[in-house]
Length: 584
Ligand SMILES: [Fe+2]
Image 1 (cartoon, rainbow, N blue to C red):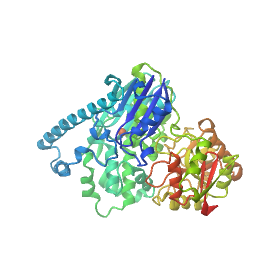
Image 2: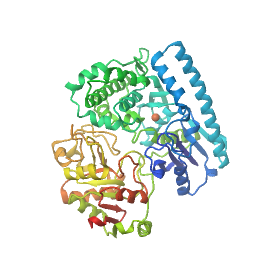
Image 3: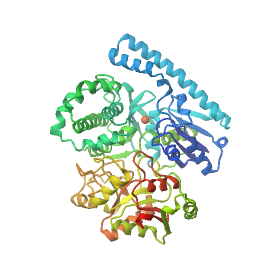
Image 4: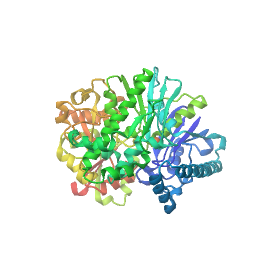
C-alpha cells in the first residue's frame, strides 16, 4: 500500500509510506533552494514517486495535513502572503479595526463574515486539489484531510518506538486549523484529547509576533530570540517580565490545560508597542519573553501531570523547537521520560498524517526513528558531476581510500570541512550527513564558520555531535535521556566546557547536542571516533551545511554552490575530497 502525505504552505513537504514503512520524506525547499518554501511540493512529490518507481495512479491514499486548504497552497511558485491578504487596504483596515474595537459587536460580526469567507475560500482550494489529483489518476475518495494538530500529535506517536505505557502528548504552535495547542493522552492504542486552545490564546503566535517586534522574521527567527535570551540576566529582565508578560496568560478555570489570555495574543504588536517601545533593551525583552514561555508551559505540563498522573511526555509543534524550553520540561522532577518530536514544526506533520492514514487503513506503521530520508549519490555519480561542473577549474578533487580518516585528520589540524554523505537529513537540523564540521574546542574554527562561511548573527551558538560513550564526560544528564536529534539542551560538565568550547552557547555554556549511537549512522560515528583518536575528544562541532538564509544543501549543485559562495576550503562528497584551488 502506497500512502503519500503532504504539508502545504509553510515549509511544504511530502512523505511516502510503502507497505507500512516510510521510504522517503523531503521538503520543497530542498529543490527550489528557498528556506521554508511554501511552494506546492510538486518537486518533492515527483522525487519521492520517482525514487519509489511508482506513479500518482499507484497511490492508494493521499493525506493532506490540515483541513483548511487555501487555494494559494496549491501555487506552483513560492508566494509571499496568502491571496486573501492581497487586498492590502481591506486587510489592513480589518487589522486596525480589530486592534481598536476588540471584542465589540461590530468586530464579532466582522469575524463571523471573515470566517464564512475563509470557509468558502478553503472549499474552493479543496475542490481544486481534488481535481488536480484526479487528473493524475488519484480518485477523490483516496484523498483525506487530517486536522493540523492531530498531525502534530500523531507525529511523535508514529516516529518513536511503539508506546507500551501511558504518555501525555502536548502540541503547540502559532496556529493550525484555528487551534494553537492541545493536550492528549496516548496509551499505545487511543489518542484521547483533553484540551484545545484556540489561536486567540496562542503562545506560539505571541512568541512569533514578539520576534517580529524585535525586527526579525516570524516562523523563522524565533530561535534567534531564544539564543539571545541567554545573554539577559534575570535581575535585569525581571522588571520587563513583570511589566509586559507576567499576567497576560492564565489557565481556564474549568480546564487547567487550556490557556486563557488577558487579550487576544494575535494582537501582541499593540501590547508590545504600548509597553515595550521605549527604554526596554532588546536582550532583556528576549530574556523576559523566554522566561514567560518557560513559566507558562512548565505550569501547563505540571497541570496535565496533576490531572492525569501520567509522567511521560511527548511534544510536537513549532513551539517545541525551543530547546531551552524542552530542557526545562525534561528537568521537571516529576517527569520520567520525554520524547521531543525532532524538527517539530509543520514540516513533520506529514509524519503524523502518515500515522493517521495507516491507522485508518489498518496498516501498522513501522516506527520511523530516522531523519535520513533525503537524496543520496554514489561516488560514480559524483565523479561525473564534478568533471562536468562549469566551475571545474576552481577546485581540485581526489578520491580518498578512507575519507573518514582524511576528514578526521583535517579537523584535528583545525581545518573546517563540509561533509556530504549518505541520505540527506529531513528537517531543520544537520545530523552529520549535510554538515559543516570543525574542531569543537577551537574558537578560531568557531569564528571561521561564523564569519566566513555561515555569516550568522554573532550571538548564535553552534552545536556538537557527541559519541554516546563520551556524552557523560561532557553533558549533565542525570535522567540518561536520549538526544539524537538536536531538539533538547543540556548543561555541560567542566570537561565539556573545555572540550566543546566552540560548540556550546557562549553565554550559559549549555549545548544542544546530537548524541550519536553507532546504529543511527555508523559512517559518521566512525569519523568522530577517528577524530577522537587524534584529539582525545569524542565529539565534533556540527552545523548545517548551508549559507545563511538558505536551506540545507541537499543536492550536488547546492553543495558546490555553498562552497563557491563562502570561504569553505574543503568539501567531502562521499569518498571525494574537493579542495578549493586557492587552498590547495
Ligand atoms: Fe503547526
